[in-house]
Image (tube, rainbow, N blue to C red; front, side, top):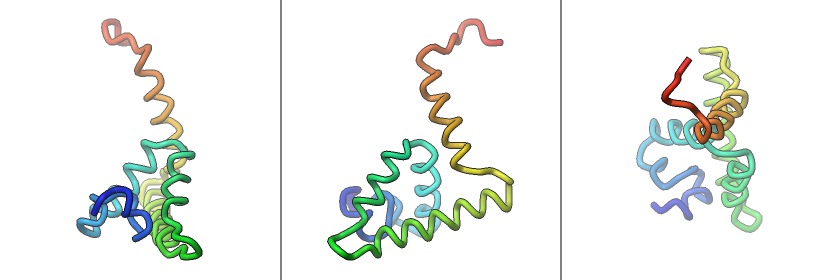
Length: 100
């Protein structure tokens, strides 16, 4: 399945449809490495006219991932995403010669 068709079928990427464990791993990895606007675009692309089943499936799986990280590791993945995205920006100016 290609990435463009995946959201309408309840997947965040084509690769996510390859097996259940990859589906959850892709939800996590895409969520924490993409901006809120990108995440909302995926959810928007998951709606087909009045059919929201793709978006609903992604949100349901996301909530499982979010709850797992919170209850198992006490990690708020939205806060984690904020830190990761900030560090992505920081890489541009990171001094790799004088690490402290």
